[in-house]
Image 1: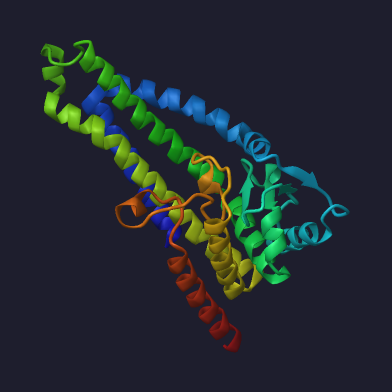
Image 2: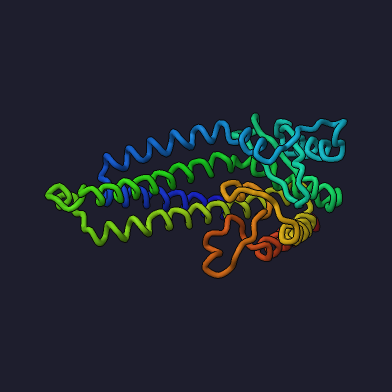
Length: 291
């Protein structure tokens, strides 16, 4: 279900690009925007892991440096038939974790010092199973595609803004395209916001998917539910110097979030929703074991 939802959201994002590209910049403007966005996000896709790890001063560790952490990752990789990723520790006291890398052969898993301090072995294993599920599900690729399309939408809207400022809209050619100044202004304002909302929805859908995949990988959905609750409380009480552009990578949002309308722009589902789904998975696994 989460995979279908992601596909539909990506389709909606692509459709939005086609509509506003035609409305604001015509086919040529839409093509230029897509090329520019693709080039920028292609570079981010290939080098984002190194940039993020450097940003958070992550230190690579081996089996002798952090034996428990390393061996948990190693065991989960064997179980999931994944290549062993590089393992990092982030010198930060907020309990959190993230995975990065463009594919399973170039992946990295990072845990903060805080998460190693407060979680027991079973909860830590559940968190790491969640992060390895992001790697197995190729969520970095999916988020890169969403960012490419979203960036193209924003670029086309900016092109239209400059075009209106310098008189690029309103002539006979504009009439041929069907450009209405009021519609153009509304589109310039709403299109980037709509693209951002869809990108956030994709991010939330991938978190639900990683929760389910991780819970089934480690076989302990309730351990993951317990870990999420403890991590959320830790994130609320221990601040982290995290960038909003990378907040979606962490298992819980390292920044303070909001509810209501602000919930549309959340990179993560609410912990309550995640826990409810994990409890349902635990019930399914229990019933399956009895059968």
